[in-house]
Image (cartoon, rainbow, N blue to C red; front, side, top):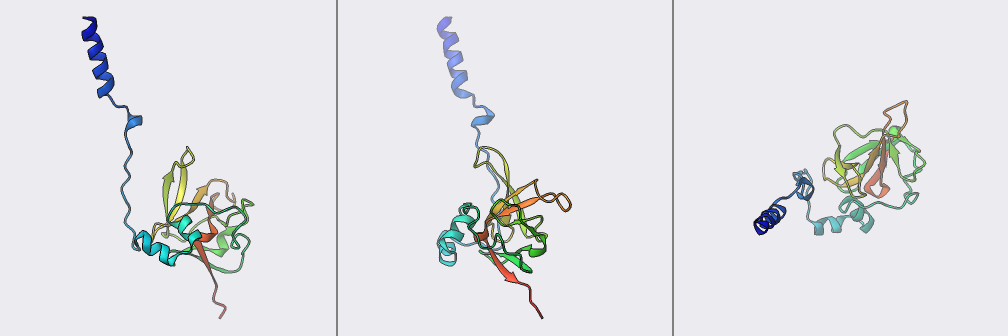
Length: 162
């Protein structure tokens, strides 16, 4: 009887899997601009590739775009999609270009757990390039959001002064 009990308990332990052991599979998003890794490496600098395609992060205060407040638009360095208007840029003191909102429809949101907790990741809606993250510590008088963006993910184009 004791041996039968041990066999039953052992088989239950081996056959049971908890939710924590199940892999969560996300649907793969299809983007208008899609390239192979080789193609991305050919058109992006190594820093841009690291950030946009590998979800890297540049060092704080390393981007010349951090303190740039000229009138214009910030575009995706991977596919040239307009992402942020300079009028929504603010100095967050964090060392990365910060905006309180994106150009409507041009930035997607996802969740990443790379640091062990959930953060809202920002992606270019056209090519899926990693831009940065959004936090709830932005200007209260506007959206309250801070889009913390890697400068290497952006290209600035000044406003046409006609």
